[in-house]
Image (spheres, rainbow, N blue to C red):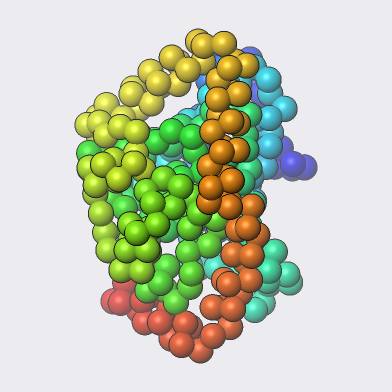
Length: 270
């Protein structure tokens, strides 16, 4: 990871990641925090690339068995960073548009079990980050939305197959097309969340779950993760999500989609 490489300072303590990510490791348990609280942890292309590299880095740390993914500040993630959205000025537009898929694949394929601890807003691409984790907890005050269609773009980054896998095709179509907000209880009853807890208990609940998993034999835990992922990948075809970048690029070049995106941003700013 070059100058952004994560390094163990000690066997227990902080890891130096990068400006937008923060993490700690203590024995078998590790943490990743999205660390752009002023931007509600919006996901720029660089953050997506750093998340993918963080997941790959954990694969080189055999002692780490569980990684909790959470957000600093008042949100898990506000989704794609519209200020750093892929544009025609990018040297490789398709590669920038594909960064989210590579991030989600890296998190999902990580050897360690990933637990998303969601609080505040979990929007669009932030929801894809959570969907790429193996288990998901949320506070009872969390809020979810998938506004991509209102932004004039398709839900990319492998988000569609992951949502179909977790909540089924009909609800995926409804939530993605209508862009309506929904709460944690609906997300839990739909199968997206494993558990909803009081906001004050979210961190302790995530840590308790991580510790209970880390205490189990590593081989059968990893085998269960890989077996489940293999079965569901055959059902929903996550491998086909490589073409998401092409749909996203097409929307970025479309006049109607651009007008919709400008109107959406103007409505939020105004």
